[in-house]
Structure formats: structure tokens, C-alpha cells
Image 1 (tube, rainbow, N blue to C red):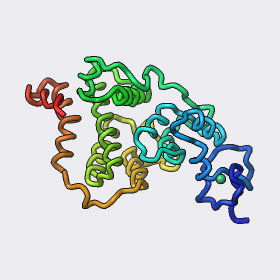
Image 2 (tube, helix red, strand yellow):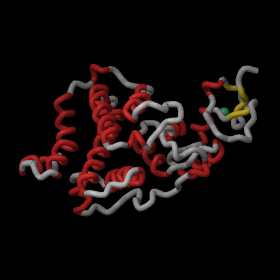
Image 3 (tube, protein in one colour):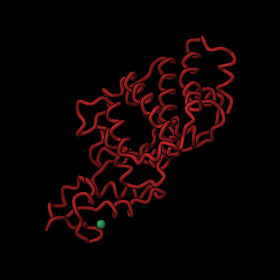
Image 4 (cartoon, helix red, strand yellow):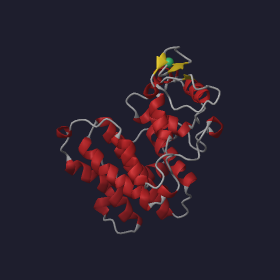
Length: 258
Ligand SMILES: [Zn+2]
């Protein structure tokens, strides 16, 4: 027999149809197929995702679960595994994190949140930004207002990249991927994050690796390089200038425009 039997559907599957699970009780003849994992883990039902993670002996990490729900067109267990792959701290189900710590799935919009992230987002979006920021701080504590500002800019770049993926915006993906990976490297996150079989690569190279495996649509769809430049100005350059006190009034005002 070439393949293995999926213990959920009972069908024989080839190795590329199987999940990379860590359930040591499944011997060499049996496994879990990707189709079944994606069917069992319903991303509108958190418990079902926890159950699948437990069965596959994969960590359930609430922030990453929320991240997949938010950024994938078709959130499924395969997408979740991709998200979790670079985190060396999360190996098996016993490493699970079931809460988002101090952050909630929605927050009340306060002037502090608006000045940190800009105006015009909804409660879920602010909560998501705060979650990601708390995640960065948990990995590598930020102690000064300047460092926090740099983390905020990094979260903004990540968000812009996620949105570019959702829109299938290949030109934006290329530019934002470069900006985001360089920024993450500057912040030193490549020393903390590490993929299992990617040792020796920088975070930037790994991000490129993951994102090269994402479907990228035709490149003639999007030509708005000016719009992209504006976005990076707004979320990266001007906040930095403001932090140093060298942003003009007009530039600061532009942060609050849509
Ligand atoms: Zn199956």
C-alpha cells in the first residue's frame, strides 16, 4: 500500500494529501487527511478548531486562529498550520494558548486607540491591531514610546500586506512584502521566530518563502503604485516623523484622512 488510511474518512490517501500531524498514537499505516481536517475544523466555530488541533496534536493559539479568520478568504486548518509554522515556541497541543491575554476580540474605541492607529477603523479592527501589537511585545518587550511606535508601524505594514493578499494585488504584495520583511528584520524578530526546516534563513527570507506559496494572481490587475506609496507614507514614514517631532502639521492631519 502506497498511502495511508485517514482515520476520519477511512480512505487511502497519498502523503501529499495528508496533514503533518503530531499524533504519536497514529502508527505508520494511519493518518489524517487534509480534506477531513479542513472539514472538521470550522473556523466559525472555535471549539471545532480546538478539537482538530487536539486530535492532530498541534497547538491551538487563539491569536493565530483570529488572524486566519480575519485574513484568509477561505479560512481552514491548512491556512492555520501555515500561520503557526514559524513559531518555534508552539510545538504540540500542550503549548496551546486559549486566550488573547489582555486583548479582546472587540474593544471600545478610545482617543488613545485612535491616536495610536489612526481614526476610522471599527472595534474589531482596533482589537485586531492591539492583539498583534501585544503579540509583538510578548515576543520582544518594547520599553520606549519610540519602540511602540515602530511596532505600530510594523503592524500597519503587516495589515497592508494582508489586505494586498486578500485583494490579489500583486504589485502591492511585492512592495509590501519587501517593506514588511525588512522592517521585521530591523526590529530583530528574525532572531526570535524560526521555522522548523528553515534554519539559517532570515525572517524576511522565510516570509518570502511562505508568501511565494500563496496564490498570486495576474500582475496586470493592479498598477496603482502611487496609492501604495501613499499608504506606506501614511502608516510608516509620517508616524516615524511625528515620533521624532519633524512631521509637518499637514502631514499629521493627513493621518486622519481616509
Ligand atoms: Zn480523510
